[in-house]
Amino acid sequence: MANNYDVLFIGSGPGGYVGAIRAAQLGLKVGVIERQYVGGICPNWGCIPAKALLRSAEIFHYIEHAKDYGLVAEKTGVDIAGVVKRSRGISAQMSNGVGFLLKKNKVDVIWGQATLTAPGKVSVAASPEPAPKGALAPGDYTAKNIVIATGARPRALPGIEPDKKLIWTYFEALAPASVPKSLLIMGSGAIGVEFASFYKAMGSDVTIVELLPQILPVEDEEIAAHARKRFEKQGIKILTGAKVSKVVKGADSVTATVETADGKSQTITADRLISAVGVVGNIENLGLETLGVKTDRGCVVIDGLCRTNVPGLWAIGDVAGPPMLAHKAEHEGVIAAEAIAGGHAHPMDKLMIPGCTYCMPQVASVGLTEKKAKEAGFEIKVGRFPFIGNGKAVALGESEGLVKTIFDAKTGQLLGAHLVGAEVTEMIQGFVLAMNLETTEEELINAVFPHPTVSETMHESVLAAYGRAIHM
Image 1 (cartoon, helix red, strand yellow):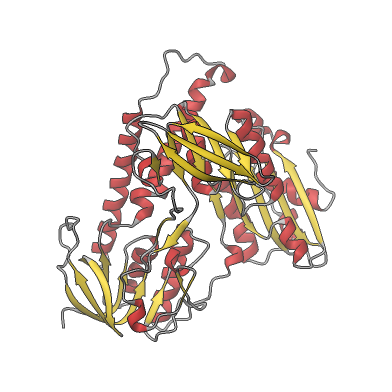
Image 2 (cartoon, helix red, strand yellow; image 1 turned 30 degrees about the horizontal axis):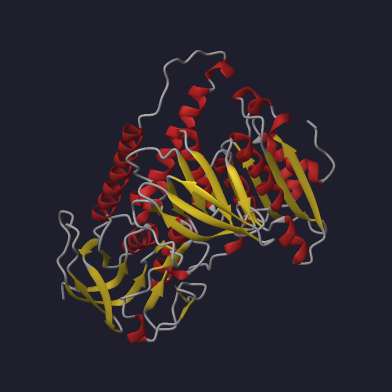
């Protein structure tokens, strides 16, 4: 019964490998089926290599502004091959690390393309990608439970399909052979603005086109407006309430027709175009139809414990719907593993999933926006504190930023927190913990924050919501 498992995970991304390790910790016999990248998109062509690029951009930005810190830096420049090489090296290191963790926890890696053939049965066909050392061969496998963790891929718009040369997805944008002199980006979500920040720092003339009225559409309006102001100050051009309706390819450039909500149009010519209009779940060619698995808008439908409508079949991560975030996938992997093992798994509260965007400036949030809180019928208290009032932020040369907190005026419950500025992606977890612990404003006010730290802006924002801010 070597090919029989307690649980098989289809996909080794953040959801799949984390869920597999947790299931193995709980004493189950576990296998992971992967067809292309150990660790999935995140460490190979997503979160990790993108952050490596952004770190290079950030350091170059500081070098270029060395005089602001009383320093002299001469003969600076960009070696894009070196920047990409560093990013790809970090990616390989992290992917190898996932492979090590799976081996350490005695999780079998099965290499190939999985298809569900019947309840509890999976047929694995050969993959064109070379198998890692120690991986099991294609064949027929059975499991008491199967978890779909196949992730998502870039969404393509009709007529503007990526071609890997002139029209890029994040795959091509992560490993450019050269820095385009001009760049048009469709979409201002996390992927779009992160690449806008990177390429602008590297010297590209960047234009963002966003269909909705504000950039970073899922963020609080005030925070998004602050970020937009900073982007435009850097020289990034932004068109909101606009769409790319047509693209004409040249020999080494694209010319896009951009239409605005008021019926006007303009043409923009750029060396390259990045399509960052979202992702779509990988639900094709899995045999979901054979088993009658319910899907909705390209994603597998699940309940709070990640169960599909088919007994013994589960789904986690991007393929199971928004928010399509690696940390959401990881947490769902743990939920599924613990539920499968018969433990007391807790359904995820999606309101408490933080969102982080690693552009310059960074943006981070959790919970309800001010608009959503009002729409939900809450009477609210809103606190705001600017980085300019924080000594550490000023000392760092990062005085442009804002922390915004939203409370239920009746109970003191923290409903949401929204931050923009330096390193806010590291700070947001303080508010995530507070919300998970059902902390009130009184407890946050009485908490002692270390000085001097940028995190003091969090405290001051809470104080401001109740008319008690000290430093403004």
